[in-house]
Length: 405
Image (cartoon, rainbow, N blue to C red; front, side):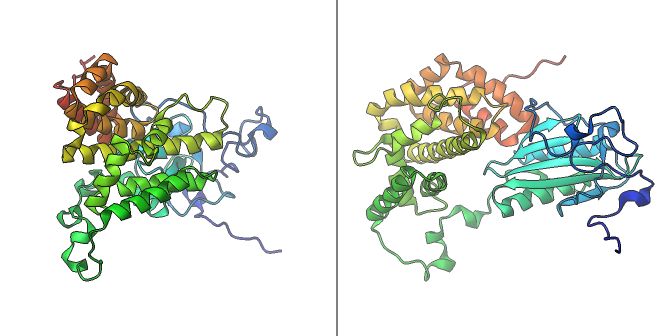
């Protein structure tokens, strides 16, 4: 039978020895024969839980050869004439500027990444030849929006090649002026969108749908309900009148709905036992992120409306239940920067309108938590650095500067 040509680019033209098979390094060919072969074949464990360092420090000798019989993803690129350490540094910088959460495994040249909208992907560096040139960058999507992944992937691969510009490296991008208006106020769509003022019934109908999905036994329905709530509290994505009505139900509570308590429970970490398996745990983490997102939108809307400052009966609820949970989430910034960023946004809205919430945040160590998160954000997440700095300014505290070593 005729031999089948490889599905990926043949990097043997660069003078490399035959690369190993699979993802992990097997003991075949010219490899070290002292390694037990059955233990190395196949994917053993997805991630080893390494703590994220301040930069991705990859050395040329740590790179594995490009797998010949394991086709690379189409989202890969060969970088010629650039050291692996430089490529890794470029990628870590674009991840920071795009506020993409990352955990780096320097010894295996891997990066585990997650965007603010929960798109999970992996980055892996390979050697294209024995000398290490070219450096092959592979980006592999695991879950989440394909369009959002492609946007991040293009930025990463362009940065790896050194093509990063000011526009592509500054994230999150500012919205154009015409996008700062809700769709209903755009002149070009004035004749298309029906004009009506029955926003109360729209809000009730939308909340009924959200509550039905939150109480469902289906995980996908729970996530969809929280995503809908995030949209309903965003004045850019829905009518501002609907957004403020739904936001008041979320923040101030409502006699007909228990939606505030439903969301608060999702933000607590000890409500679900540690015996949860990995799949359900990821589902719970996703719901917690969406709950914090909904709270951030709703608190921002109520703060601008002025109803948050006048809600005297709700100040104790904020201080006793919400503020401690937010401060605790900010303290976990190195392990979940996305949630810490949303929590800082929530806390900023609260302390700007409530003196009780401000005192409670100070008593729970909010300043130290924000300062630590700010330092981490400056190193790895621009959006987290900006939100924590804004919250510290609201608390009349300047971000401390790290003393030079």
